[in-house]
Length: 168
Image 1 (cartoon, rainbow, N blue to C red):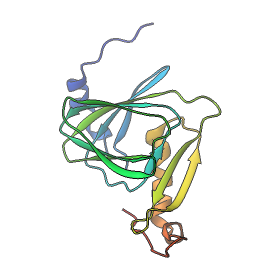
Image 2 (image 1 turned 180 degrees about the vertical axis):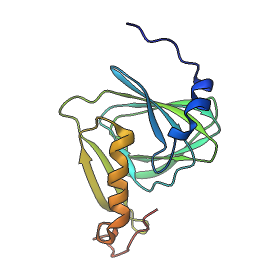
Image 3 (image 1 turned 45 degrees about the vertical axis):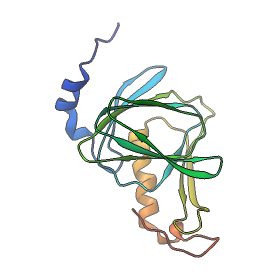
Image 4 (image 1 turned 60 degrees about the vertical axis):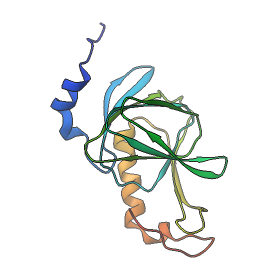
């Protein structure tokens, strides 16, 4: 049976409580594609690495997508009403500000695919910690990894320069 169309503005009003930290992510629909509503603000320091492309549409307010592109750290502003297709395997940190909402569409992960959460050193930019997992529900699976990184100081200590990175 076909699903009915969704009035996204009304959906946001009715489900605003679902867009809570630390990920602020809620699954709207799932099929061959995963459609998520994502709210702000968030306070993440990790970079997500997805083996497939991700499509961003900024419904309300602006966001900033921090990426690592060929080893170079860059900021990509995505303004209200704009969309952006992020290439596969691009480390990215979506920075969402207060009272903002976006839509992110990702492909359903193949059985062999692994998503990664990666943290870079605040001082020298080397990888401090990385965890990988087969993604089934991003909104539920990110939070425990983020919380573990925040709770365990040894995970935040850079092996290259010795700096202890902040939890948030």
